[in-house]
Amino acid sequence: MNRRLTLALPSKGRLREPSWSLLEATGVAPQEPGERVLQTFCRNADIDLLFVRADDVPEYVQDGVVDCGITGLDLVSERDFEVDVLLRLGYGTCSLQAAVSTEDVAEELGQLNGRRIATSHPRIVGNWLERNGLSADIVRVSGSVEITPRLGLADAIVDLVSTGSTLRTNGLRSLGTIFESEAVLVGRRGASDHEAQNTLTMLLASVINARATRYLLFNIAKDRLDEVTALLPTTGSPTVMDLATPGTVAVHALVPASQIWSLLPQLQARGASSVLTLPVERMVP
Picture 1 (cartoon, rainbow, N blue to C red):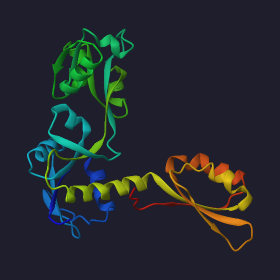
Picture 2 (picture 1 turned 120 degrees about the vertical axis):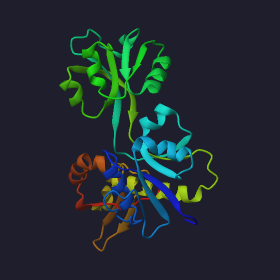
Picture 3 (picture 1 turned 135 degrees about the vertical axis):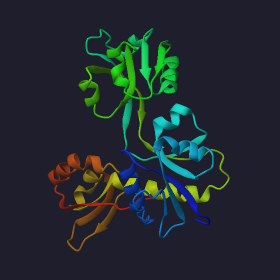
């Protein structure tokens, strides 16, 4: 990076710790801030860090106060900030779900037509209603959305849901999801200097890609090579090397971590031996 990059991180909440861990995993060595310190830096990279509320990150990026920031996709979409989503980060996942009282007769999202809907995300809800040819009265609330049906302020709610336990605790049931959210890296739209921004995006993506990948190694009889390589869920060709044992080869491949559970028994059944799976630290596409 030719100049110092400023990056806004969430100062608290569920996005703070995973954002910090992701940055550390890139190898840029962020300096741990002291208690209540709102600004720090990275020891071996030209990056300055600013800790702010996740809700404020998109505005800081839009106004050029910082170059990039990590926040929730729902926060970006709700206020239509002039920022670009540079990278989805794969954590902080949740969804905006519509819910009604357990006694309500509604069974699907289409039955929200003509209802009063309480939400702290009126723009996202309004856009969803328009796309689906529905109309409803949107009651904007800033907190405790779940209580509004019990108070008679609304017939239904739309709120962020992670596990659904809060809905159940408040006597509500979900009708379905209208928006999927997760942590994202955002940058200012139309920024003229992209080099530092692109470098940061590449570094973060290399860690995200690696976390979802395993390095797989095994030995196999050469006459069964085509059979086992056909099983491998790789995007490219695996590496195949002859071994000292005649008629045997070693196969190295990058495979999705989510498929290891089903893949290993299949390899073993076809005679694979000395099977190893290793974590990957970074992987640049």
